[in-house]
Length: 557
Image (cartoon, rainbow, N blue to C red; front, top):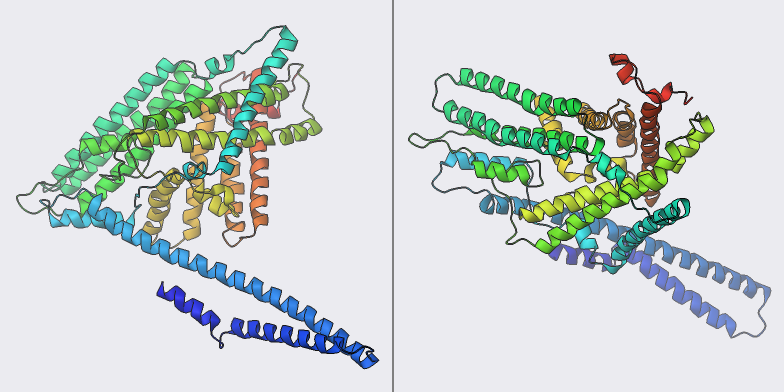
């Protein structure tokens, strides 16, 4: 506060440049007005006086321009100072929250050794700090103008329903509202449930047992290297078998439909990321701990690990900030919104995508048809992106956070205001971004001695692109690396060219244009490949036939 007051007083001091400009402007305006009044008192001005009037008019115009320039300078300086003050306050707030989190949420028992407390404190300072806060959309929905935009999307859903019913009534003479696509996409849910149960049981019990046994033996055995290598090999083989081979085997053996398949694959990825975080944090804790004689090493409890497997974060901590109670009405509303988004997605596919790409007449796609279909796909593609964001990153994660009383709800930031793709990638999905940042980017920098930052960034993009393409390939049952190219090639280029130095609102428009085009390309190419697989099925099982897109060779005859 004192700093702000001093800054304000400096602005008003006569020695300050802006104060001198302001006083000069006021002085010029008063002199010009005085001259105009004096000259106006003469009834017959001479040519010299006319010239003086014109000069005074020019002075008035210049003074007005100078005043406007000063006002713009004041606005820019004020904005810069406010931004700097905001950064300073945010840093101070974060530092205070770190110390507060260590004392409140660390779960440190005073009876434990001092070394274990230092290990936990060091990890909290270096890693992510969890703070009780709401999601941005929950805060924005308290504003009536933002709720109106949300209501507009609901009205569009009802328009989709009415248009579908109207077309069906005209074509078939009766009201038809079938959901065959839903029943197909979510088929074999029983297989999904028992496959998920096996993956969950392994991640909870087997992985925890191996790590806990290693943690206790490490500090009580003379053969620390032998114990560590044996435990690492056993854990690696178990991870490859249960979280690597098993879900892929289930998907391929039972030929799961797309939605059921994506559930199994996403849960496989989630269990892998959560188990890696638990292993990464626990191993560091065990290696740095130095328990005193007579005191057993305190390994993380099974209950804290179980809570971590269900709470909406990929960064393991023994404790998290918790809310005092559960708002069950909030949970019900979020699950209702998820079902609404699924219906929304269904009508988008039925009304905007399937009629364009089904190609019942087996007509070949010309270049003109392909380009028109690609631009036609921009709107449904963007709607799908917004639906996935709202249904999963907001409703699904907030629903489980409320059930688990998990208080840190920052699952995303205001990515829609981004003026650069670098900021968009950081703010779109905070949950995954934190995991990639702490366990891929920072660990790579640590291994390389804090060199090769560009290589670390490229490695993160490569991992993200591979995982996205793996999920798409397993879900659709064909290999078409559209997602990989968008992430690993175009995404990398945009990350380094459209960076944080670009702050103009124009770049926000450019970012949205690129998002529309990118989503249109994905929807168009994946739909074309899906129906090409239907019209021109594979005749062999060779590797090259599997990785070659059928839409490149299918003649639709």
